[in-house]
Length: 171
Image (cartoon, rainbow, N blue to C red; front, side, top):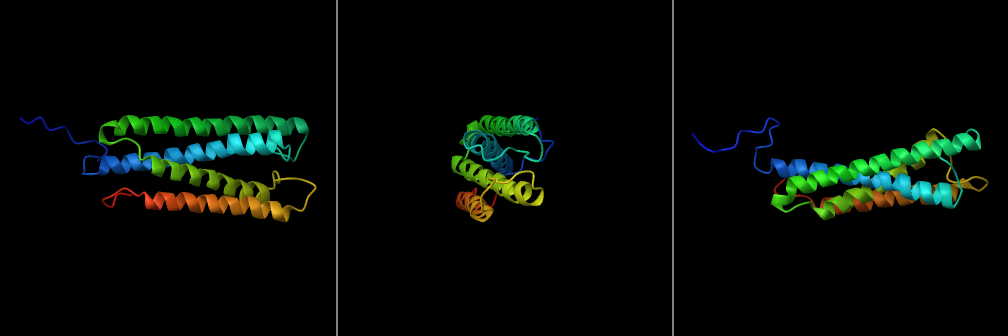
């Protein structure tokens, strides 16, 4: 009789398989955290509350717009907290093997911020038209800056992720 551990029911007993799973969880954690921060902190606090440029849903009354902002805020924070719980889980699971790959996580966060902003700029602003960036102005410069910054953030995040890939072919 040996003291070898039983094989994992999920198939994570191959060499490096735990690191792959940890890397995927790290990426998901960063993407969720980045999207949540972009929604609940940047978009809501800056553009909705501080600048009063728009609400999450501007196609109704001010009361409906404020209610929609409340639900949007709750959803954004929910996604942020989900990302943090996943990060805590990755930290716990990888404590013995060196911990979280922080550069990968930061790359995923930046990608998540840009991804949310690009989704908001294309889907919410242009396709669904539930709100615009701002009203009473020529939208073209605002759209170019909003979506251009989003593409730049996604590109920077993906470069950081690519440069900090796990060694040994794990993805």
